[in-house]
Length: 223
Image (cartoon, rainbow, N blue to C red; front, top):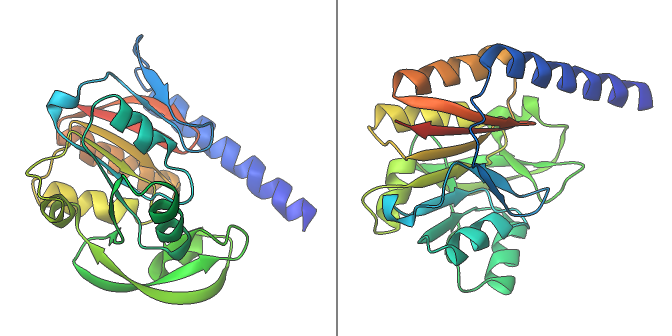
């Protein structure tokens, strides 16, 4: 088990290095990072006038969401999983919170609970990129476009997606729906090279530039 874990970690680091070397993020001066080491993100600038922020995938760390709110953004947080719902409603009742996940369609889907990080759930079709599962449960899901409408907004200035492997399908549907947040903060939990490259190329064709890579976290901005 220890050897397998070592090999997986080494492979992940190699993948991250290869993607950074190939994609060459711009890393402009002046970028800012908000939130904890675990739950924080880089953004290119502070500009709440560009539209509200949508933070999808709360888990039990919403420090990024809270910092954006402190900075003047209208913030909407979404996560359908039990630990996230309990944590956000108990600890941060002032957040605009929606107990839904995001996907390429509206409806309800089965999620699989991670066997190690039990607060983490992945859409059932994406469990191959997880470490294993201990249970399955159905949660409501919506597209990014539907989430924006659900919040009573017409656009998104910033979108954060930390959705355990569903990000590629969600981004593809978002672009197809004509939704163009100014800033995208995407965690590529499905970090297979060809999938990350395909999503990055799709975003570039839609007018986005890659500014930063931090581990599995990618930050894009729309021109």
